[in-house]
Image (cartoon, rainbow, N blue to C red; front, side):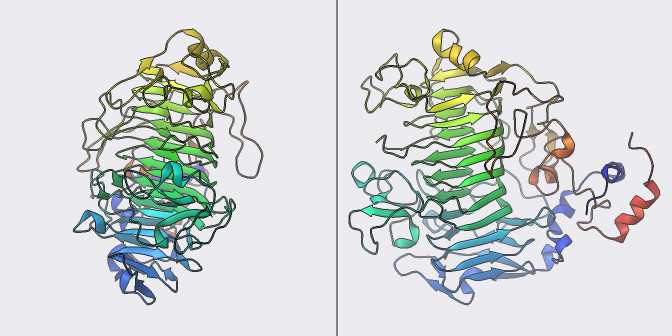
Length: 575
């Protein structure tokens, strides 16, 4: 039970929240022992862990497993949960990924098709995945990226892979083994344990021809923090913080944060999975990346980059793809997204792994809908690919720009395909150097569009606002990436909610929630959903984010000592 707002005021008066208490007392509120007293267990040595033939350093939990918070679990190999088995992780549990001697041996956790993960943490007792070297006292630098692999979930929902257009995996970025069946990016084609989707036609050893299951359920991930991931298996094949391959809508992904990932924080390869209350901080590549026909929903997304002077890089907020091989296969990616707040680091010069430095980078035939969001401090706001493979040869209806523009007609250099299947409506762009562009890449800011029909559609018809600032909203952020000391926190809650008058509202469908404002957060800071468990709270990186209001002495638990602090203040004014 929460105390009243006065508890928060008293807590703020007695001192600031400390990273030491937040980290070393992980799970104290649900009876977990101090992190330093937990027994370390190598997962590959657990009962039922069996080496996978033909795949060095890969083990399956053939009888499932139950991770409890009295232990620290070390992912000392690539650990797989096979079909028919479940990995259950108790609230407050700590899991660490070991560093690998060779890139190909990077450690990771993989939930195979038909396998299940139940990682249902709570606000008071989140589940933390981090690097083995992290002492969990708040001193492990956020600049430590790629220290282990990450978490990969593989399902049986749809994707748009075909062998003709996308085969043969895993060479030259091609992922297909057969129609509908792929090998997840970064992993070797050594067996069925690295595959996602369903073989819908053709012949592949060990596979049966079937149909996609768009309601496929891979389990629950809730209140889970994933830190210091993105190890490189080979050039151009890093593992993401959280990879979702053909994951179905029966899977629960909510209250997740990805911290300091060397590659994309979250990448989706097809699937229908939905996401809510997602945070990405200090990633080296895209905040959210989708491909191969993802058609899920997302709401309340927060992303923040570090400073340009740090070792942490930057790329896009949303990288929106439909198919890396530009096949234009269906289903095309078409997510529906409401209420995001993504903050870049104003980087203007791309590196080899950057594709646009845009808040929204729409390419490779993508569709989708993005509403009622705030994008701040990016080089480009909304960038679209317009030409096909650098030419003026338009095929199968054109590129992302042709899906967006309201200039209808046969796809060409100047007309769209009439579908308007890509919508970016009622968003606010703050301090973006170029707000609407086409053709941006790592080496070019693209064509900056400031007049004409495209700009009128973006600015007037679609009600996107271009502003220098928002009252109460501060995108400036600076942190010492070695000591984790925040020099300048940002503020993500505008003083007054940004209007959504005349804008689409999130449908009442059991997933989306009413949110009559732009951005991920209400203008009421007491309703900031980053509070009570996230790394933003631990670091003090975002103003208005507070610790658990019942833990007044900040020892990681609510007990009689907190009551003794509260009792003398009962009935006094909060002003």
